[in-house]
Length: 191
Image (cartoon, rainbow, N blue to C red):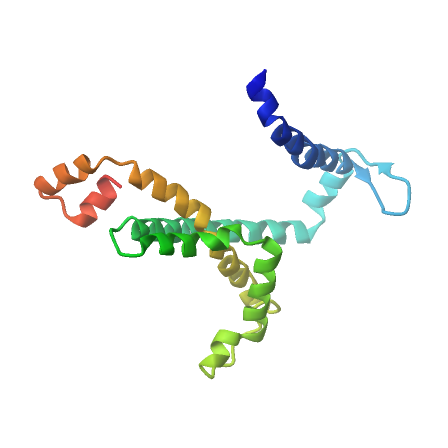
């Protein structure tokens, strides 16, 4: 019972702030639930309407799939690249680890405000004398702006890759070097 007492605060938080809202959202999806009126049960009516006559649903689904198809490989690639960088025996590598991880612990609100300033004002481009696009207003650029801002917090994934890379025994790399494996072959075959 003692271990469960120690994790009880997390379990309570998980039930109250994750499971509870998920269940309530599922229940609400079967109702027509205006803010000021009494909820009216619709059964599967909301789902039928969403799949048959709501054009925004399919557009939103397409955008979500594009976001995932671009963001997931980009996020993992950047995180793996940074993890490989911080495993190198370089002077001051601990500072780089901290710098790369800090964006992962910054509040989502703060990150949104920072990226809003950067993208709305095109601050970085204006330093170069370039008039940039309306990143957050133009539908052609908005998805890429969100992906760029999301990729800013790769620190957690980088940390996971870093710990996994550090757990690979050095003997494996030494054996591969003796066998004549190039650094690229070692990366793809071992790392």
